Image (cartoon, rainbow, N blue to C red):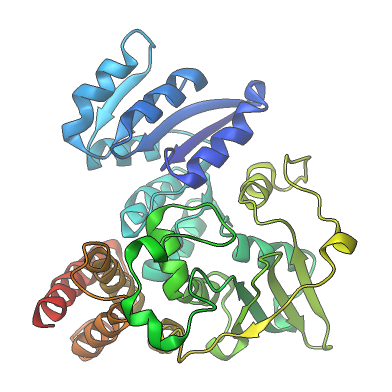
Length: 388
C-alpha cells in the first residue's frame, strides 16, 4: 500500500485526489489530510479514508474538528506547527494543493522527508523554485507537476532531450472575460470574475484565470520547473481548454497534450507515475468536436502576462514579491476595495517600489528570505492599495 498525504484536502484539487483514492482504497494508506475552515468535509473524508491525522490550519477550528472526529480514531490537530508535522510524516506521495504561498513550507517539509511531491501549488515554484528543486535533490525526493499545463509539458518531454526544446506553449482558456470589450473590464465584479467557462475551480483561482494572473504564475513556474529561458515560453489562448500545452522542438515539430478539462487526469498521472492507469475522465470524440480554436494572448488585455516576463528576467526574489502582491490585490478586489483592472497596477507598482531593495535580486534563496520578501511585498501592496 502506498502511503499518501493530501495537503489542502478540502479544495477542488484535494477533493479530486480523494475521488481517485476512493475508487481504489485498498491501494492506499492515508497518512494525513489537511484543510482550512471546512472542518466538516475534512473530518468526513479523514474518517472515511482512515487517516492517521486531520489538521486544520486555523487553531480556532480545532474544537469543531475534534467534535466531528469523535470516535473515529483519527487524530485532530491545528495550526502551522501541526501542518508542518503532518507534511513531515513518512509518506510515499504527498499532494501539495494548499492555495497560495502558504503551501511553500509544508511542501518543503514533505520534500525533506523524501516523499514524491505532487505539486499543484504553483506559488511554491514561483516564489522559491531553486529552493524547491535543491531540497528535492538533497533529500532524494521528486517533484511531479499537477497543474494541467505543466503535467502536459512533463508528459510531452518523456523520452526527449530538453536541449532539443525550442519553445513551450502554455495554453489559457481566457477566463470569464475573454470575450468582453477591454473597456468594460474595469467595472467587472468579483461574482462575474468567479464564473469560469470551462473549469470548476475555487473562487480565487477562477478570478486569477479571468485576470490571467494564474497564467502569469504558470509562465514563471514553467521557467523554474523546466529550466527554460523566458523567450522560450509562450502563452496562447485556447477557449476549448482541450490542448493543455505544446512543446516545440528544434526540428519544427510540435507535440501537444490533448485531453478533457478534468483535473483528475493530471492528478491521476502524478498519482500513478511512472505508470499510466485507467482514469474516470471523458474520452474525447474529435469528430464530434469538429474544431479547436486559438487566439493570441494579448498583453494589453492581460497585462499580468507582461509582468510575468519581467519577473522571469529578474528572478531572485521577484517571484515572491509578485505572488504576494497579487494575493493582496486579489483580496482587495474580492472585498471591493479596488476594481478588476487595478489589481495589475497594484502588482506592478509593488514590483517597482521593491525592485531596488537590497537582497531582492539575491541569487541564493532560502525559506527565511522568501518569507521576508513575501511579508515586505504584502505590506507594500497594502500601502499601494490604500493610496488609491
